[in-house]
Image 1 (cartoon, helix red, strand yellow):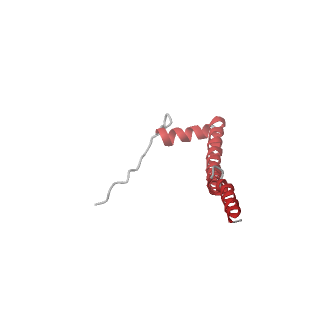
Image 2 (cartoon, rainbow, N blue to C red):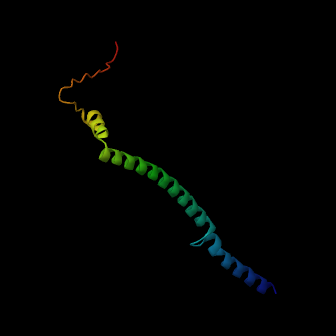
Image 3 (cartoon, rainbow, N blue to C red):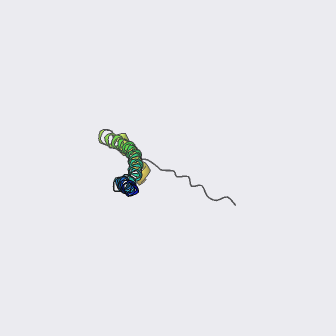
Length: 93
Protein backbone atom coordinates (compact mmCIF):
# COMPACT_ATOMS: atom_id res chain seq x y z
CA UNK A 1 0.00 0.00 0.00
CA UNK A 2 2.87 2.34 0.81
CA UNK A 3 4.40 1.57 -2.58
CA UNK A 4 1.15 2.50 -4.33
CA UNK A 5 0.96 5.77 -2.42
CA UNK A 6 4.59 6.54 -3.27
CA UNK A 7 4.01 5.79 -6.98
CA UNK A 8 0.92 8.00 -7.02
CA UNK A 9 2.83 10.78 -5.29
CA UNK A 10 5.64 10.52 -7.85
CA UNK A 11 3.10 10.59 -10.71
CA UNK A 12 1.45 13.68 -9.27
CA UNK A 13 4.86 15.34 -8.93
CA UNK A 14 5.70 14.46 -12.54
CA UNK A 15 2.40 15.93 -13.70
CA UNK A 16 3.02 19.11 -11.73
CA UNK A 17 6.54 19.64 -13.08
CA UNK A 18 5.52 21.16 -16.45
CA UNK A 19 3.02 23.42 -14.70
CA UNK A 20 5.63 25.00 -12.44
CA UNK A 21 8.98 24.55 -14.18
CA UNK A 22 8.26 23.52 -17.77
CA UNK A 23 8.25 25.42 -21.06
CA UNK A 24 4.84 27.01 -20.44
CA UNK A 25 5.08 27.35 -16.67
CA UNK A 26 3.27 29.91 -14.56
CA UNK A 27 6.51 31.77 -13.99
CA UNK A 28 7.21 32.16 -17.70
CA UNK A 29 3.60 33.15 -18.38
CA UNK A 30 3.98 35.95 -15.83
CA UNK A 31 7.22 37.09 -17.46
CA UNK A 32 5.60 37.11 -20.88
CA UNK A 33 2.67 39.14 -19.54
CA UNK A 34 5.13 41.72 -18.17
CA UNK A 35 6.89 41.82 -21.55
CA UNK A 36 3.57 42.38 -23.30
CA UNK A 37 2.70 45.25 -20.96
CA UNK A 38 6.09 46.86 -21.57
CA UNK A 39 5.73 46.42 -25.34
CA UNK A 40 2.27 48.02 -25.29
CA UNK A 41 3.59 51.02 -23.35
CA UNK A 42 6.44 51.36 -25.83
CA UNK A 43 3.98 51.12 -28.72
CA UNK A 44 1.87 53.93 -27.26
CA UNK A 45 4.93 56.16 -26.98
CA UNK A 46 5.91 55.35 -30.56
CA UNK A 47 2.37 56.00 -31.81
CA UNK A 48 2.42 59.43 -30.17
CA UNK A 49 5.77 60.21 -31.75
CA UNK A 50 4.54 58.98 -35.15
CA UNK A 51 1.41 61.11 -34.96
CA UNK A 52 3.52 64.19 -34.16
CA UNK A 53 5.84 63.43 -37.07
CA UNK A 54 2.87 62.86 -39.37
CA UNK A 55 1.39 66.22 -38.39
CA UNK A 56 4.73 67.89 -39.04
CA UNK A 57 5.04 66.23 -42.45
CA UNK A 58 1.50 67.30 -43.39
CA UNK A 59 2.29 70.84 -42.26
CA UNK A 60 5.45 70.88 -44.37
CA UNK A 61 3.57 69.55 -47.39
CA UNK A 62 0.74 72.06 -47.15
CA UNK A 63 2.13 75.29 -45.76
CA UNK A 64 5.05 77.46 -46.73
CA UNK A 65 5.23 79.00 -43.26
CA UNK A 66 6.46 75.73 -41.77
CA UNK A 67 9.13 75.40 -44.45
CA UNK A 68 10.24 78.99 -43.87
CA UNK A 69 10.34 78.45 -40.10
CA UNK A 70 12.41 75.28 -40.51
CA UNK A 71 14.83 77.06 -42.88
CA UNK A 72 15.26 79.93 -40.45
CA UNK A 73 15.70 77.90 -37.27
CA UNK A 74 17.63 74.88 -38.53
CA UNK A 75 19.63 76.30 -41.42
CA UNK A 76 19.97 79.95 -40.34
CA UNK A 77 18.58 81.24 -43.63
CA UNK A 78 17.28 84.80 -44.09
CA UNK A 79 15.17 86.49 -46.76
CA UNK A 80 16.72 88.52 -49.60
CA UNK A 81 16.49 92.04 -48.10
CA UNK A 82 16.58 90.97 -44.48
CA UNK A 83 19.26 91.58 -41.88
CA UNK A 84 19.83 89.05 -39.13
CA UNK A 85 20.82 90.22 -35.68
CA UNK A 86 22.00 87.43 -33.43
CA UNK A 87 22.52 88.11 -29.74
CA UNK A 88 25.14 85.91 -28.18
CA UNK A 89 25.22 85.78 -24.40
CA UNK A 90 28.77 85.61 -23.19
CA UNK A 91 30.19 84.63 -19.83
CA UNK A 92 30.12 87.44 -17.28
CA UNK A 93 33.36 88.24 -15.41
